[in-house]
Length: 250
Length: 326
Ligand SMILES: Nc1ncnc2c1ncn2[C@@H]1O[C@H](COP(=O)(O)OP(=O)(O)OP(=O)(O)O)[C@@H](O)[C@H]1O
Ligand SMILES: [Mg+2]
Image 1 (tube, chains in turn blue, green):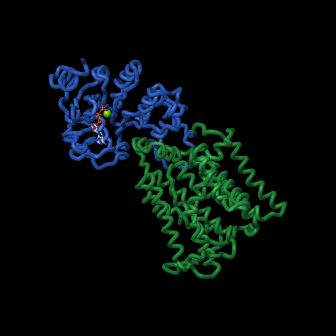
Image 2 (cartoon, each protein chain N blue to C red):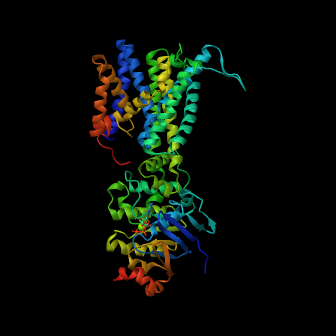
Image 3 (cartoon, each protein chain N blue to C red):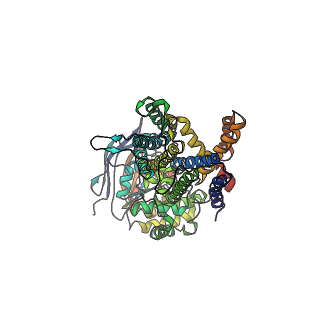
């Protein structure tokens, strides 16, 4: 078995009386999709925020390629290759879809501290950005103001930005949410291939997608991982059924 | 050509045509007013980079306007008194050469903006406004209580700084210098807003989290913008010192910060030629209404209110319509 790229160990995070992460241990291995499921408010998004450095954990460790990244800020972690998409799209609304992707491309390809040359005239940057828009099927909407994109298109744009970062790990927080059946199916196909580029930690409520995609599933309830295993193991686990899947699959 | 470009070119031509006409009609005062518009517009172009493009509501840009002015004033007065500015560890002489004064003013204002920005940017929202204001007020009180350069009374410079090959005392020549610099900083603004940095700055304003998640620190981007912004406003201060041949602590006062902000808001926040439109309108109102009634400031206040409530794009927005895509 290959060793993990991302290792979360004994991670704890408290919001007042609420344990949002309660000694969470989980890892992500090359080539896999590791789904993280659990009821609303279980602490899935909070876990992703701690991994990317938006929130600081109270205890535990986070390792990336064997190296502790706990003390790095969010920007440094992004630069190392952690790309996340947000549960609620987080984009720059007043600029075009293309410019949102350019922002990511220019951050990866050299510096943002260039003051004279127009970004849009930089053929290499624009070509790279268009490639990523094409991959998610947004190429025809490249010049549309982001605020004028539909909900589904904004989700696609988030994905294009994550791709543009050429990350070593994808952390996707409910990418299917609000995509509609067709969108979900397309995205499922897309993610199935994406795992070969970089492993994916996939937070998702859409169980069809999870069961179709996941190599492993972890179940988070009240901040605790109550089970980790293959799709069949999780499906057949009594504990998981009573805590979560029972209601989901009913 | 977009409608906004047409409006911008018309404004630039108007600013050029008025003093040229005044030269022929022998109205030097109008040339001076036009020069003032150009200088205030440069100050506004500076603030617009922080406020308009970066969303950083600085209420302390008087600090840079004043530092630029005092840099020019102190260098010139030392040169005129034949006293070196610094004698230890090495001797630095004063100068009346614009080509030396400008870079000095730019450096001093850049350094000041780096310090003020680094501290202010740790906070946000209303605290940012208050801290930038507090810094400017600190410098204001320092200037008042520092007797070496005139203290409260200010510092008269007696000559206008020199530019190789030009007679800067000729009003139209001095106007031409200020106008050329205005066009230069406007050109720089165009490049900046379309550059990689401009894209990052605009993202930092719209959604800092977006920038963070692609691995860029909003703080560094905003601080850089604040420094550039302060430098340009400082250059305007140096020119203003030369225009009046006098600097006083009033340049540092919060009125000055407010006025620079008014230029930007009147003209249109984040609009390239907004500061020019705003400064021109401000000077026009001051001299047309100021002659008729003491209450022109009240009318200015009403106008500001109307613009903030009903015409966010300011004068440029009214003339050229909403902003297109980036
Ligand atoms: N910044 C915060 N301060 C206080 N409580 C918080 C904060 N962020 C999240 N919480 C709480 O922590 C718990 C976990 O929230 P989180 O968003 O991680 O859940 P989730 O598993 O992502 O849920 P969902 O499936 O609805 O997205 C919730 O009870 C939430 O109210
Ligand atoms: Mg969530």
